[in-house]
Length: 115
Length: 111
Image (cartoon, rainbow over the protein chains, first blue to last red):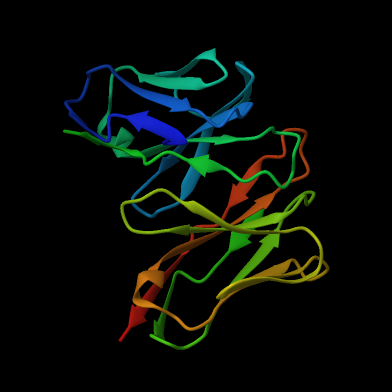
């Protein structure tokens, strides 16, 4: 009965590799997000999709490419991984971007370590 | 620019009361959220305030003053399990209702 699930939980890889993180939500929400949380615990928005449409695309290197095959899924693909990409990546969803009081529901995070 | 300030770290004693403050400067305001994040886990929703005043939910209460750009989270009867980071986030006035996040306050509870 997991609401927002993302895989894998841990990802250790070498510089230059390409990796993907998958995210799925079963809450029927319209909006999904990818956040990066660095070692200082600051949450930074990377992307947001509303009903499969990209609505937020922050200043993120184009090595990061989100894909939303349907509104319940938002995957993140990262090309040519760099040391600075090491962080925890959180997927989240909310009811609708137009509902101000709709809280975000987060997945358990993917701890990415690039060596 | 848009900014949210919270203390980096606070320490309190089990059974006591602690108040975690959050001040914000944002272009537009559509509500303020508090989240709890235990180490190594995901943030979980605690409260939402959009009107001035105090909202109480069990041991946790959240207060908002829009005119002062100020909120606080009040935790009563502290338990060891309350040791966590507490994140303040404001929903701004842009068309996407984007959330602006504070860096979080790490709360340490001592016996």
